[in-house]
Length: 326
Image (tube, one colour):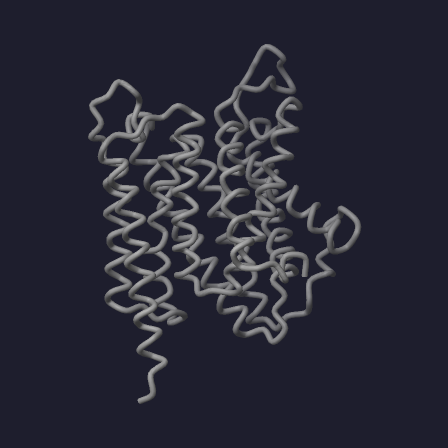
C-alpha cells in the first residue's frame, strides 16, 4: 500500500534523502530564535517538546488524509488485536515516542553531527537487543564488523583536531549529557525495531502502513500530556510554522520508509542501513552548519564504512553456509 510496492533500493534512497532533510530542519528549528506568541520582544528556538509533538501531529494528519480521507485521528481505524499484540503496539509506540523526544533534546544540546555520530552506534545496541529477544542470528564475524563501527564512532567524536574550526566535540556545550541522551534514544529505537519485528511475526496480515498509522496516533497521544506540562514554553511561534510543517512531512515519510524497510529486512540489517544514512547526514550537517572535522573524525567515518563492509561480507558468508545441505 502506497510504498509497499516500491523497490527496496528506492525506499532506501527516499529514507536517506528525507532523513537528511528532517535532521537538518530539526537542527535549524532548535537553534534559530523565533518571535514568541506572548511577547514580541522575546525570541527563542522551538523547544524539543514542540518539535516532537508537531512531528507526530503532522504525521497523523498526513496518514489520516491518505488512509481515511479526513485529518482527524480515529483509533477505530486500527484493526482489532488480541491483548498481547495490543501490548506490543503500545510498547512500540512508547519507545518510538521516547526515542524521538530524546533525539530532539540531543539536537538542542549539541551539533547535529555529534548526535548523528553517536546514533550511528545503534547497530551494537540492535545486535544486543536482537540476541536477547532471539529475533536475528549474528556470527562472530558480523559482530567484529559491528565493533569496527563502534571504534569508528569513538574515533569520530574524539577531539583531536588542532584547527581553529570548531570540531564535533568542542561545538557541543555538554557532550556527556548529550552522549547519555543519545545512547538512551538508541536503545529506544532498537527496542522499537524488535517489537515491530515480533509483532509482524505474530500478525497474520501485517500491514506496515496501518501499523505505522496506529503508532503515530498513539505517539501523539503519549506526547500530549508532556506538551501540556511544558506550557507556555511548548507554544509554537507562528513564524516557525512553515519549517515545522516541512519538518513534520519529511519526518512522516522518512519514518514510513524506515518501517517499510524494516518489514523486508532483519532489524540488524536495518540498523546497518541506518548507520550509512547517518554518515550522509553528518557530512551534510557539517557542511550546512560550518562544523569542522579533524583527522580523527574523518578516520572514524572511514572506519564506520569499513565496519559495515565487513559485516555485510560476513553475513553473506553465514547465509551461504546455512544454505549448504547438511
